Image 1: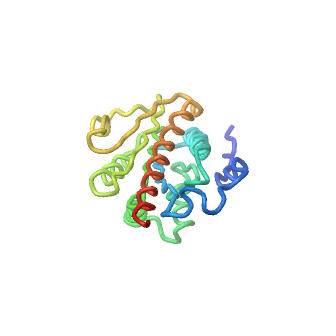
Image 2: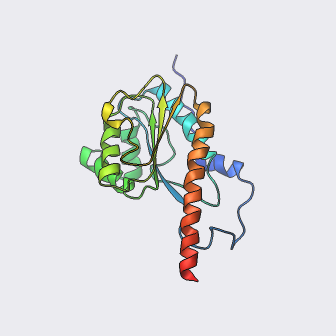
Image 3: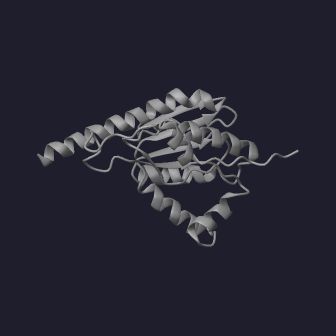
Length: 206
């Protein structure tokens, strides 16, 4: 018997987790863009309901690292998709027919803005390899976080051990909650780097 997928709003989850916001004029709020623009890659065409549920759990864990001083800008949205939903979601949100060109153009424009790329690997995805290649060789080449489910290991040699090409972190997991510490560590690194960049900007403005 199939059970309907629960629909979660990460924005509502984040509002419930964050009780206070930093006061005006606090560090990192007055200089530069403090948001972290996230491109989250999830499998589409080979993803079913079980993978969709797992992705939903991972997205919620990612949002627990969302710091109001450097809030996440979810470039790719906050919904877990599957082979049955992603085309309809694209047409509804973009008001365009789903075609390979329309979808590719949209995704690459988002990649060009990414401060970080998170690749959720819970199944095979040829498109993930394409977007990773673009990001590294033509896009921002900003830090990459691989979240690799043990039941969907990376077998493609060319996307393993990418550290010589880009800043890459690989985390393997069985259950989504095993990722919490590693995800928080990754975003702590990004936030520390953003704070240092803003400090440099302040120095230049003085």
